[in-house]
Image (cartoon, rainbow, N blue to C red; front, side, top):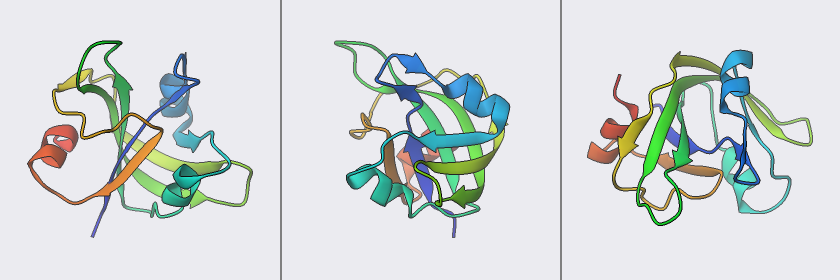
Length: 121
């Protein structure tokens, strides 16, 4: 059964990589150490992935920009790279409840009403 991941694509919070990732059919985690790479190693082909962006200082919630299906996960580099079939792009979907999704990777989430709001096509 597919799992659901909400990920970031801004390096240092300001260097937005999402359009490059969509153009190249990938998502990449820039972190080498800590809990985020450990979590990313759980990603599997067939899982769903959503690139989010914070709304800005003082605002709550997140914006969902792109939705995809993970095709593969490359772990033998310094970074974790997923090959992704981006099925919906440039969405700018407003999600009022962030569920704490402020770091680079969050999940896996089980299917519930929040996941439905984030991932519905």
